[in-house]
Length: 639
Image (cartoon, rainbow, N blue to C red; front, top):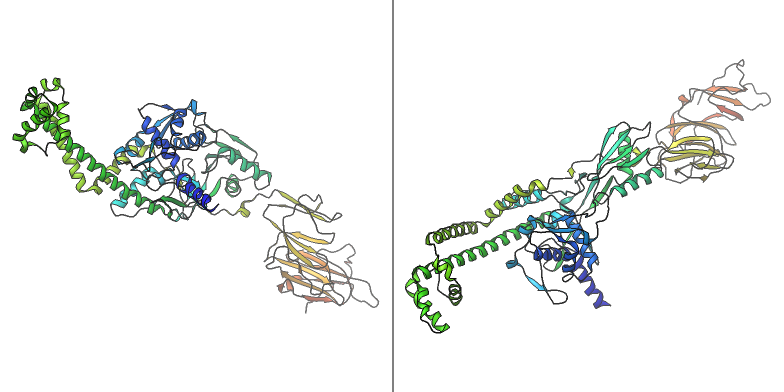
């Protein structure tokens, strides 16, 4: 188990899920591109044919190869596709491989391959040779982006803009600072303030505009979503009462267009904020750059990856220039040999030679007087080359044309030698040439900026009608009663106050049993002033207070005596209260008025001010039916 699992884990990390820092590719992608390079003749090839050839290099079947090829083609940088390659906006699948065709783009042909600089290893079955890594001169890892889950680690590298990456490489070579943020093929909006050079995350949004007071239109979607999943999230949020929409119409074809109809009485701006808060119109994408470097998994930043890619670019360009220099010098040497071979009629010397050894000897003898005109010593391969010169070329030899060709080669060699003296400047010139040539093909699609924070509870629609069924003792938006009716959102809390002075704050319930003694239900507000009167065995008390802070679902007491009874409870401060006493022998005053505003505001646990030790029949903020208007008005003064 130990040995087999470790081998499997190592294989999955290095050879399947995690890209290589050198060329930015996973093995399946590298093998697809290598096969397309070998097949490349400028014409389109059936994807089924490419997949079939790639199976000689990739041991995991045609489905994984075909899927990887479609993903590469939809990124539009390296593979040009013809036919139905699916739709990244709607999530529609591609046609079968036998119906679609593909070929390398010009960018891929010129910047990914150089067989002379490629290191090869045997394929999984030993029948072919495949590249360890492509000699890539583009920062493909950051350009394409990728995701991979291996054993014990994962990578999520976000795609970046082609032009911005190359401009950043120029900045690196010139010793200047740079900053990079992702760019997604689906467009949309992005807040990258927490990107942290690839170690953090970005917030992405759909692009939503108000068409008119009845319609908002989604024209771009965030990465990781499709029009179907986005519409599904809107419908789900509407069903849960988080927002209101009248209808949703999808007109997406080549471009995204989702029209959301705004209900009457709803502000379109509020609907847009709700879309961002409760649907896939806004999401957060984390970034973790894990790559294979020198055969080991390494976690890096965007800057570190791009600097490594830039160092590799300079190294590759130097090796290419050195190879080109060697080829040009060999070409000049051969042209010089051919010119001397024909001008000095050395070919005549071999007419009398009887054996192959004699032929070679005569050529060596013929060049002895011309050693100073040679670019280097004559070798056996040089002799073989001269012997392959056709008679037609000798008889029609044009000395002036030959000299002109040599001049062109010398000029090219001089340019190569000049570039080799300052490879960094040559690399900058090359990068600027790529930006000029291909930059217009890769405009920035995702607009970067700062998002205003949208609090879900602030934009939630009040779609839940909360009621209290006193007979049944239930409260909630499915309770079916007719008391304490209020419209609430999913994020609202409820403050419940009972006859015995208990109170608590709860989440919005669907249907909760609270009993028949509920006297108040409303939104909790820690600073709102309430007025309350309650009776104990000794006296009746009145107070003004604020609830202050509470813990959800924890039960509190408004009355110091647990056996108290609430006689009056009202939000805010009534202008006047009417106190009616129970009849008693020798009682002179049977009713009084009082002004609660005279009371100081205290906390919820405070006892309050004493009304009377007499039994109070009722306290109301309006005159009760049995209020005697003719009786002399007695005003209660609080001590």
